[in-house]
Amino acid sequence: MTVNLPYAMTAELTHRCPLHCPYCSNPIELQKRENELSADTWLNVLEQASELGVVQVHFTGGEPLLRPDLELLVRRARELGLFVNLITSGVGMTEQRVRQLVEAGVDSIQLSVQASSSELADSIAGFQAHERKRQAAEWIRASGLDLHMNVVLHRANIHSVEEIIELCAEWGAVRLELANAQYYGWALRNIHQLLPSKEQIQAAEVAYARAHERFGHQIELLWILPDYYEDFPKPCMGGWGQVSLTVAPDGRVLPCTVSSDIRSLIFENVKERDLAWIWHDSPSFNAFRGYDWMPEPCKSCERREIDYGGCRCQAFQLTGDASAADPVCKWSPHRGVIADKVGSIASANGNGDVGTPIYSYRGR
Image (tube, rainbow, N blue to C red; front, side, top):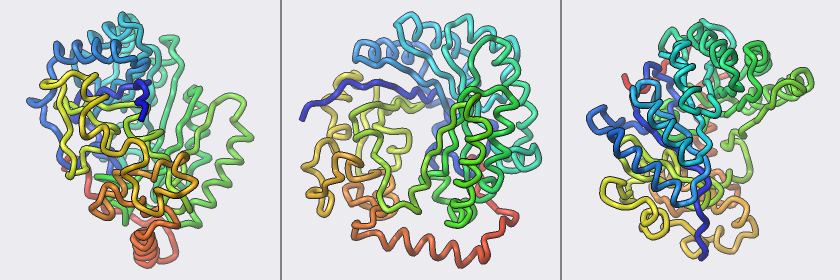
């Protein structure tokens, strides 16, 4: 099959983070500081990415602000003509740091928020971060950059969707991603505390529509579907190894940010292989390209060019087989895994009230 050139690269500079969010997308086995790529290696990776055809680079973590060489990497990325986005918790941000990042050439900064109230937000994050985020938002706006924001929605905060949107509008965001939690890694470990009921999802969708009428003229709103309640799975990153790639803190190159959890694959490292070879020729990136790998019913399904068989990471974590039909799909032979999980959570949580969740916090 024809392999596209990658459009975007996610550069995970570190897994270190002051927050301990229970839905963290980083793997359960976090990379330690001593395993992180050096600045020189990252500079080389950026050059290879540019030569490969990458247009956008997203610096993230963990918390990328913990890297003192962040500005150096941002500057080099801009020199190479890449669009540079920084994804941050805002913790550790200072007015001076924002100025330095702007001077280095950062194009946009995306700030996370956990809830509309500081008490709930800090409880979810496991850290008193909410006020620091508000101050970071103020500095970002004062620098002249557009403020982008994101929030992960789950059982403890989904009841306040409208208030979250109102808060982000008040803080001056021009774009807000409302991402219903995706259950991998830490989120899967905490799914009994995080997964909302179907009724909560439906109520949140009504609140979202109401807020869209109120704030849609001043802030772009994106709603990421909670696929445990869908009939069909979300597309697998626009196709496995088709649109983007991720470089983990230790240098492993991944088709998506959570694919390191697929233990049946070996992912190549930029310390040992060129990025172009990894993208075009590595077994891990070619494992689920095209359609030949698909089992039935995916292989003959008319939706195979829409969802690419669903999420490989979800298939592996729920069935132990990364090539299995995504259990979210109503035609998957593994659909019962989702039904059983949703049913057991609904039974355990009774009437759907939000209690005091006990999380297995990331990094603790």
